[in-house]
Image (cartoon, rainbow, N blue to C red; front, side, top):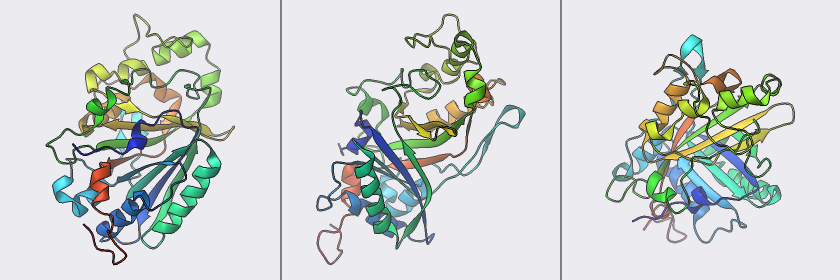
Amino acid sequence: MDQPQTGIFALGTASHAYLEFAAHDAESADQLVRAVAGLREPRTTMGGINLVAGFRPEIWRRAAPDDAPDVAGFDRDIVGVDGYTMPATQHDALLWLSGSGYDVVFDTARAAIAALEPIATVAEETSSWPYHHDLDLTGFIDGTENPTLLDAPEEVLLPEGSPGAGGTILLLQKWLHDAPAWESLPVDKQELVIGRRKADSEELDPQADDSHVASTDQERFGTIFRRNMPFGTVTDHGTMFVGFSRDQHRLVAMLESMAGITTGTPDALTAFSRPITGAYYVVPSSDALRRWVPTDDTGRLP
């Protein structure tokens, strides 16, 4: 089976940068894929940085039609109860860089931007960092329902024999928190919103139907491997949702549940947090990307 991009499962990194690119030319799919693949090839020094690369589903399908899963871009807003909106801000390519320190992430990100400049420009940039090891900025533990690293590849990678095998589908969103409103709630009220105890992340029993846990229950939607991280400044911050799945329908169903489309009742957390971006990316296997790397200075592909 084709091997995944290892950065998907590289836990414990302290600094992150998410660079979303817009191609200069709508017909430059091959050039964009080749340029991004070249950033990962062995002759390029990444300075100890994990690099995960993804593409707008339509771009990957145009470049590699035989290796493209059934995925669509995030091209329309999701509008839920009372007009609550999850905006569509789809771009053409994503580079997610992570490492032990922001200095090396910064330098590598600048080099990647320069390498892609003839083909694409940065349309959205976000830097992230861990908060008290595994908390998000609500103060609750994040990723509690994630599968273990032993189980995650089988759960979230496209299976052998299917288009895109060894790759995965990424949902990327920036969620901005209303920190003053959230922090004005006593802990017991926050726990009702989340559906877990704050101290140890144990699920409440019973829990409200509109709690965040109930609205995003993986037993209903299927496994999503979350690599969420905090982002922003002291006065303007939130959560970068980074969710990987082998099936886009799981991701769509989760968002529609949160917006209240399927239940008529939105996720209680949406009263305190709102997405300001939204995009889907096909994250090909490392082997699939390697096929786009020129084998010599003439630029010929294998």
